[in-house]
Length: 291
Length: 296
Ligand SMILES: Nc1ncnc2c1ncn2[C@@H]1O[C@H](COP(=O)(O)OP(=O)(O)OP(=O)(O)O)[C@@H](O)[C@H]1O
Ligand SMILES: [Mg+2]
Image (cartoon, each protein chain N blue to C red):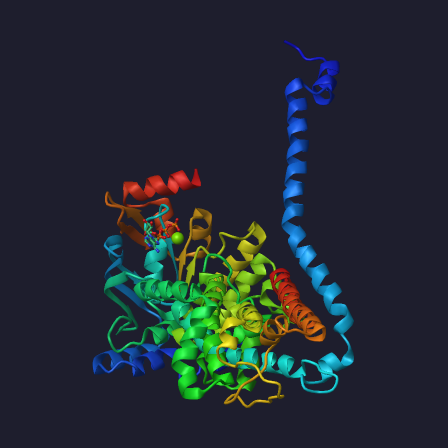
């Protein structure tokens, strides 16, 4: 059976009935998937539009520059408090979490790794309200409502995040790199520190930043520990502190249009910070991947 | 200039003495000192070496004498334990979970597995080049070369600079990288990266250099460059190289050891001898079959 040129052209260009059905199914599927994607994004878009519209009138300079009891009230003390609480949380839980992740990835025996990973999974599953209750019932009686109690509660939440992310990025370091170092007569601990951790450092720092952003948004543990205050508190973790999530929670129940508006505005600030961090982190990872 | 460089490289407090100092046994110390003072330093003796992964024995009772300052090629079918065996010589095998070694491996009379020898010291004396080039991705070309010295300490900054250049020259890479020593090691081509890894290995002044299929990821031109380099290095180092390429074995090696696998997949040494003899006139039919098949 010979095939003429004409029939090849026909073969290439003339659709069969099966193909026509396929093309139609394709089209339908694309439309359906498109609708699904739109429905998924819709709430997010609605949320952002809503927050921005509601917040916009209240985003005046005094909102950022003043404290709640000033004549033109603002949320400076909450911004300051949030950054301090999240910052100290990361400063405390960061080194411990990173050390734990390095230990599991570089030093622990397979048995210990299995136990450690289970422990991390359990800790990751702790709802933030539970961390808050723990701090409220155990720490607050001793420390009082305070920044320290809040940092303790937040650290319970960020510690496993940091251990897990450190362990995961170290897992991406090729074994060949470690072997190269060991084969040069470099001791195991130096190989772990100056080769494995050094190679994974951008990823480890990304984990720290994400933990910071997670701590920023936590609300329940803060309500039960730092409690909120109208005063501006710089670095005194032994007493109450204000924080953006506390402001949002308290103001949105208030009977004043100004406070409700400021709750929206605070939400926008918090969202913007978290979003900026996430975008920056994405940029970092993309950069370090292409580098 | 050549001899000056060499003296700088083989400092009196050499790695072999270091290893010997770590050994309390007086006889071994004496043997090591005697050996390192003579030109015959770097004699490797494997005696009844077996290597296991858990219960599985991958290498069975290998007894092999490696001549100092020569190239010994390990050849044999895939899976017969060549990589495993070579990794027992620098005590890398035991770094894998469940991996164990029995028998003895002595270097100039010092048992590398004696309880007095720190595996870290053993690895400094016995260097290794891997199958795939593995430069440290966060380090520049010159940092890669000096990495072993910097991470093990005890070498001054001014010394390091000289050693970096010297090692890159020995690895026949200097002319290609001298203008860009601060660029990442991973920016080099595969063949250059492998020479960088060789430079990195010889920068810590080992006595023995192990190479596990060092050219298998490289093109023919880069391969020839590295083979030339291996021949040059053999003037100073004892070299053990694993290769699947029979032409390569015949080009670079002085001695060849042929390995095979028995029924329970344990690798064993079939025979060993001068390379020319092994390729023209092997004693065992098994060797002849493998070599002929490979030359095909
Ligand atoms: N990490 C490991 N764990 C368990 N078994 C292993 C491991 N590495 C190698 N083996 C086994 O040990 C045996 C020898 O492997 P080895 O890599 O030493 O062979 P080889 O001679 O180097 O092979 P090739 O020529 O393919 O590189 C094989 O049966 C292999 O399956
Ligand atoms: Mg191999």
